Amino acid sequence: MNKLINVIWLPGQLHDEMSILASNAYPNETGGLLIGYDAGNGLVITAITGPGPNAIHKPNTLTPDYAYHDAEIERIYSESGRRHTYLGDWHSHPDGGSMLSSKDKRTLRAIAEYQPARAPSPIMGILDGGPPWRFAAWRHFPRSLRMRRLFDRYEQMILIP
Image (tube, rainbow, N blue to C red; front, side, top):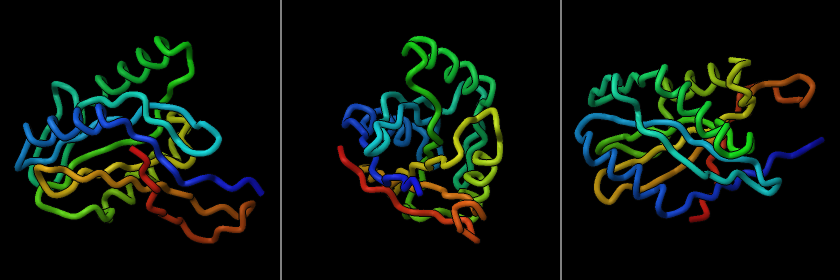
């Protein structure tokens, strides 16, 4: 059985970019995409996006600009020589914690089931608190009879800056 490694590398510069976006949107949520690649011993984040110009920000929810996200995934994928791809989403929890909400879990399940996303075990990054923003990432492992998982599993990833 192939075990997925639950490590994520997030360069400080990308954390800083997310923190600026979160601070600018505060007290509303904001977010975007996590783009990168699987290094075999964990996931490497190489780019993030913001929510897009037509996103809707509220204190407890974010509706991203999906057309913007699709275009950014395509652009980054092409510019990276088809190496860096969509890994999952990130968003802020202003004045909140880093635990996944029930909506976050539903979103991860939907991403895993959406074949065009090509992310069978997607990740969700959460910036929590407020300045200074803390980053935590969760990975969704869908139920799978083949893998002998009877229930969806959400595991917090080990962050390496």
